[in-house]
Length: 325
Image (tube, rainbow, N blue to C red; front, side, top):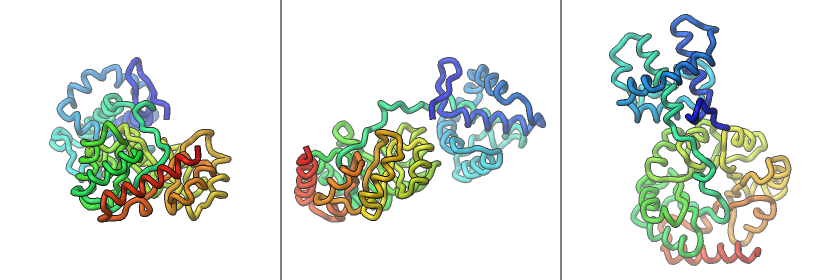
């Protein structure tokens, strides 16, 4: 989604402000009024808005994620209720009248759209070659495994969320290898997972499914989003939501013919990642079919595998990749 600009201020999405102001209009009994005009007026008064909610800036940033995929007033209500239930409650929003609370939440909505950084293409890690999937890795072993991978040329590393103490592992990898490798989170299923991955230092998130809210949230935080898809409908849904690349999963079941058929109808150059059943013997099949990257798990790493063994497997994979010329 191309960011909208009011003056020199980039906005993550005009939908956030549009719905916020529309909601406020309904609350004060002025449905059908000039929403665009009210939006512009609210932004022109942004300094005073930010002054009123400035102490809740962290809440503002969190709110943006919750509001970024909202298209109706009902969805906005539901998002705020969940936001409140999670304990992210600005003090001002609980001790005043219902109307005052609603107006305050809309102020946060407007402010959030402005103060949220807009990710640029330069900030998104490019995906190509091998993505190491370290499912089951523990924090105590992750640095040794990471070092083994990076030394052999595998510099994109994913730690799935169903691994022990996953956030600790991601944090350690990001701290020690962030200048040498792209570190990310896998099996990311919710907006909460996205928030946690970003806080731990992940630069990308990978999912087994296509969830527009997860994609939107990741991009809003400046992370690349690699959702999983199998059908053309899922792939185009992911692209429309802002996916940086799409993970074709399970790739071995889709097969080379299926990948080629998808590639024929996708935007030229849009990155595809083959995941599921990929190894040194068949990686050329997926690359020749039109994938830019290969997510490799069990044939590269299994829980408890010594780093020396990981290094040998990484070396074989990289050599097979390089042999293609």
